[in-house]
Amino acid sequence: MTDSIDKLAAQYFQLVELQQLDLPPGPVLIQPAVQTALYERMFNENAVFPVPPDRYRSRVLKQLISRIEESIINPEEDEINDDLMESWSTLVSQPKPSALQQAQQLSLVKYTAPTSSAGNCPKRTVTTSESRGVILYAGTTGNRTWEAALHLGSFLASEAGEALVRGKRVIELGAGTGFLSFLCARHLGVRSIVATDREPALVDNIRACVKHNLHGRESIPIYPAVWEWGTPLEKVGDLAGLGSDEGEEGTGLKFDVALGADLVYDTDLVPSLLSTVQDLFENYNIEEFITAVSLRNENTFRTFLNACETNSLAFEALPFESTPAEDQTGFFHSTSIPLRTYRISRSK
Image 1 (cartoon, rainbow, N blue to C red):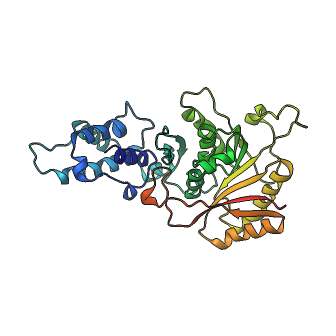
Image 2: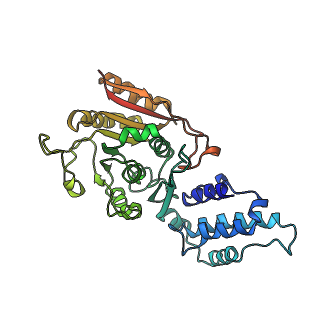
Image 3: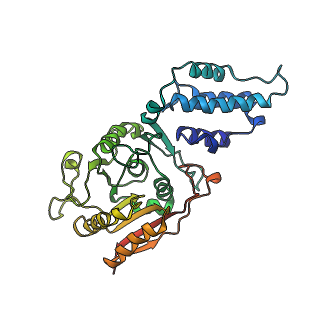
């Protein structure tokens, strides 16, 4: 019972599409203890955070209530939890926002990392602010976390992935919602992570979300920054407090590892990305660039890899596969499109 509720709650706070939710079977849902747990963990507004959008909550609750009703055999003994019914009544009575308002609404989304192989580790969560209903936001491909980032997050949350960033100075390219940067800053023991994006609105959004990822800490080592590829990354704003090691020459920014997900979805982006990656190796001291990609068009990413090879950058595919969607325990994402992770470094 606990495992099924754990998974459903994790999917619910990630705002997973309804058809992909792993709802417990009717004979489980009919149990009073299960219904009480569902209310307390998912629908009690005084006890849960963040609270998903009303429309999403009502759709999920409608499915749960329908499944419970279908499982009632003896109306004298089987019934629906009063708190769940009261929540449903409240939700259906709320004013309905327009389709445009729903599309533009920013919502807090809580991601839960996949269950550790150790099995007894505390849950690791990351909270972002996203607009799920709109594809284009502030001129980008949307203020939302895409499959490649969730794939890379799953890798970084593994023992092998965490080893690549723990104790390191990390920079993320095209951070978007900041999902990967928050994961690194909150749970993976990075020394620091600079979350960069070219869009100031997205960087402001990351900055505003820091407070939702403190989990009782006074601060976490994340530094949001606007960075237009092809220009110097200046040590101003949030980056002003990011110091160099004692004894290092110069006062410029230096990193050990760069991260990026779904950065190459158009061949027109290849020259600027390649130039930026070269810049990171030559002027910012990185040793490796870890990137994940959704292979919607394999030729597009192959163009980038070929350009790396031409410019004396070596690449290797990392042996990490996303768990099939039906077996995932966290960072839920579709695997219908191939997802790959690569390490790029200087050729020896």
